Amino acid sequence: MLTGILQQNPKDSFARYGLAMAYAAEGKTDEALREFATTTDYNPDYVPAYQMSAQTLIKAGRIDEARTRLQEGLAACNRTGNAHAASEMQGMVDEIS
Image (tube, rainbow, N blue to C red):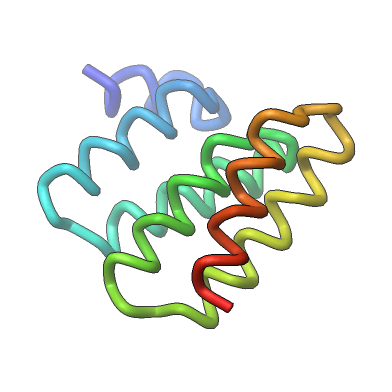
């Protein structure tokens, strides 16, 4: 269903994020990360994609990449005024530092 939506509207952030989450749940790390990145390419302020891609990277042991993704996510939080997500992501940064 999500791929059908994306065929009609490739920039649909909600559908692309949903697809990324589905890939992550299936253990398809590279596919998930690609979809998270595409989500933020199309919508740089889609905060959940940064947070979940960082979690996926951490789970895969790719800590440096996760740290970078979290910094990008914190910048998006600042742009959108999302203090709750910023707090969660800063906690993740603190845990992996």
